[in-house]
Length: 267
Image (tube, rainbow, N blue to C red; front, side):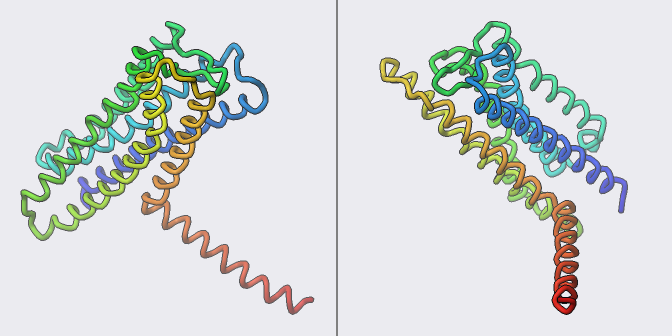
């Protein structure tokens, strides 16, 4: 294995680990919020802080996908610029990503705009608060998606416009396969945000309509389900980890099949 391939695999592992941490944080935060909803009405001293964590973790998830898209852009479109694919550059990008994820929701928390929703028993930005809702949505959804979609369009256009030598075709097919997998994950996370978008548009265009008491809870459940599905897809699409789990499962099945006849004869 060449040095470039070793570096590529190392960066891929770092990015996968970064996404796994983001998924772990959002799922733990969602689980804690669900436990508080079951045990009490959720309107305690830490309610606003839990809402802040939900917003920050949601933005973190999208921004990890944005970093992976940038890495694919550097590998496929700019292969001659090796410094863009170095570990140092990717670590700097990851540090910037984490700083943005941690800090973007702090103004909403300090301004007291993450408030308790009595119908849903959860603290979030109100659907009727146009300014803060759009501010958070810009960092959580719009900015990452506005980068991810053009990046993948550029990659696909580049691969169609250029012909590659035979010895690099395998690498190009591998990159395209990874891009398709990332696009599936992006589409899943995009569609799970549709309930929130519908409720937000309803609140803006019909301000005098009767509020839906479970609007934000339905949005919260759809996001939680989508994040779990995203973690499952991330697990399935990681080839080495998937092969390891399948091998362990086969070994376990073989052990059970060997034990069962022995138990029958003893009986």
